[in-house]
Amino acid sequence: MDTKRLDHKLDCKACGRILMHIPDNAEEHTAIHCSQCGAYLGEWGELQDDFKKQAGGTQAFDLDHGNIVKK
Image (cartoon, rainbow, N blue to C red; front, side, top):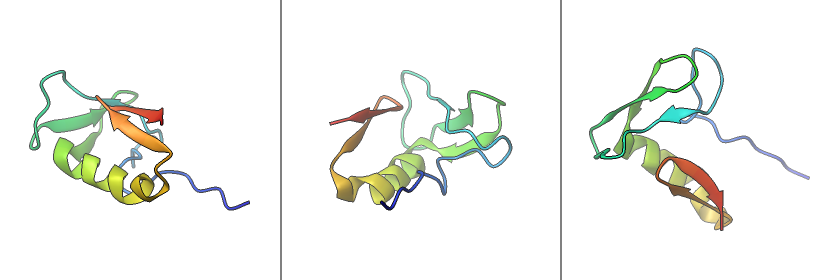
């Protein structure tokens, strides 16, 4: 079985976790930080695009207000 972990822009380069602090009113250019260590992860728009690129093809998961949910 080929198991892959979401990574690239989604994982924190400082602590290795995928835990994002996303404000309720986040827009495309809102800065997103790791909720574990506070490191900058990127802008909300680019993180959403990266998630869709990595997981969108499987159609098994979705990104809902910063939470990865099973469809």
